[in-house]
Image 1: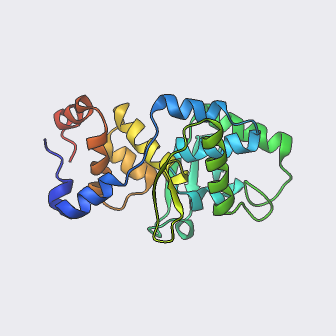
Image 2: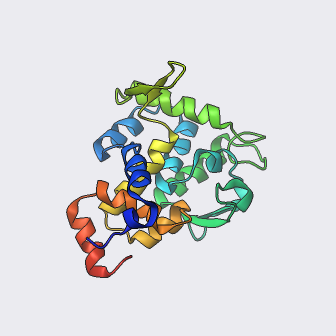
Image 3: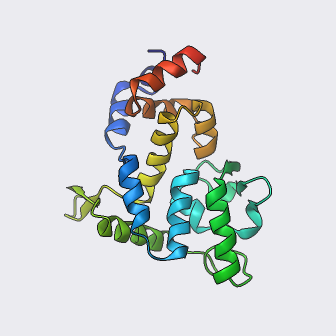
Length: 208
């Protein structure tokens, strides 16, 4: 096994990060989408999964940053955790849904969702609501104040994007750029959650 995330970040950090990764199986994500009955909400949740973006990046997304011709979205530096701008790929089906959403429901404003954007809190609520509706939501623990910790959140969809991309043999360096991981070692941790044949494929290709 040529993946060296453990040696780069240390066993304790590696194990802690890996154990906190929550992601959906493909069948669970299909059930989630099937239970979304609002077109705007479908676009929001599909964007979380399809792009692997963080919730704050989706909430602040602007129409002008969507390149419809090339199926790309610019994520400005001020909206990213790393404070580095990046460009993400968006699927053609989702891109058509965004076009339809803008045509049918959207007034001409700066932000994709709402006159001033949408809040992170609202997106978290939507994901939780539809996960419960799809009967895939689970409580996996409680915080120090006794508040339940749920397995399906916007960040779960980001994790899901990464794991599914690796399962579909997307090159790890492409996944890293798509989701905006500053260090490749972070992306490599997810490789242990993908099937063994994916790791073998990356080893054969020489991805480090």
